[in-house]
Length: 216
Image 1 (spheres, rainbow, N blue to C red):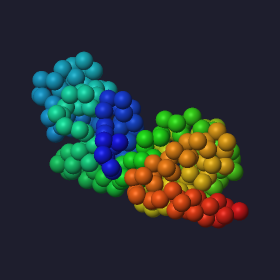
Image 2: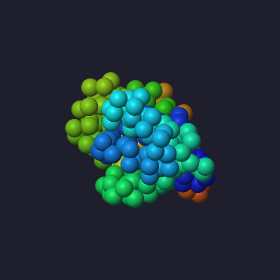
Image 3: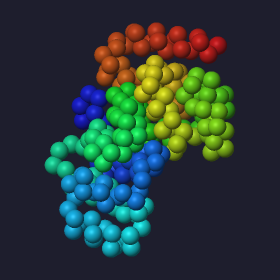
Image 4: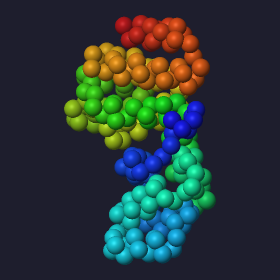
């Protein structure tokens, strides 16, 4: 992370940022205005429009890629994106990004999304995600139909739950620890959480034991 509570955005996160914008229903037709608000030149945007024959989805992707690589001379973070969207008066998208994606504990979990996507959970663990309020009933069905993996919208819903209630990050790691292949990942997440939140290791262990006993 760039600094405590700030996950830097760069071209490597292009696909994820696109998923977030689409998840929160950013109006793709406003891609040109989006680019102008992020400091891209009119001529650059017209070139993107011409190369993509005006297709708003592709134009948004190319516009975003340009912004993530050369649209700013300072570190880009979720709050940068939220502020620019507010300037466009796309308030619901801006607020969701600010509350969920720019939340410091959510950002800790975002650092591990790639590794989380490789974990196959048991159906029991997926059920616990639902009963513990990390995913909805509809999402429960979706996760099971995708082979019990946390990818796409389900992961974004978990980020939202964690941002709303930071204790749910500990709940998530306790659930992950039920799977041998995810134990190392869960340990890394909870240790990073403790470091960023200034929580001592012994306190983290006590929290995890308490969470584990809750599942019994």
